[in-house]
Image 1 (cartoon, rainbow, N blue to C red):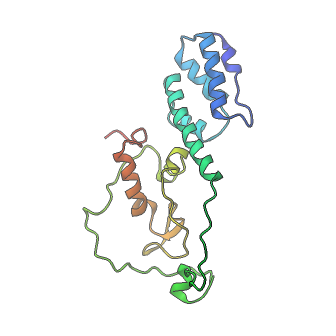
Image 2: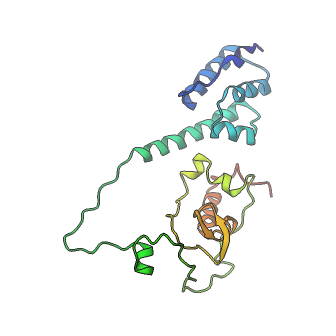
Length: 209
């Protein structure tokens, strides 16, 4: 195999789609027989970005696998770009209609106190074990899983709050960005991840049973 394929580098400002196409053209021209060397050349030419980090974390075996994962990543990036460029309509303000109070205003009567609100146990029926989301074993830690671009776009992130989200004041939840419970016990995240597992979207990230 010619070593010309190692000369292909991803430039600053070049999209993953452009780099994938240029590298693919070179592969077709050279017709390499060593799949491992092709994979190594592609990963070596990448810049340190989330996609290149995912390749190092779960090293691909073939260039076809790289292409498949790259297409999924590119589609996720396009969705993020569309969301960032979308400007929603402005809610009309009705005359004489009272404006909704913020959470801290409604509970304390003060605006923008800046103090962390105490945890209030919800007055709902106790959840049974059947109500709780199942625990899934992933190949990466939860805090790394939720920032993978194609997964992050499918998660509904909760609004930030000053209130404690549970009884454990020292436990930090990266998903809620608040104290009160560890992320491994986060029900809001657990339900969403369970839905993605059921749809087989996270099958590549699950550990073998």
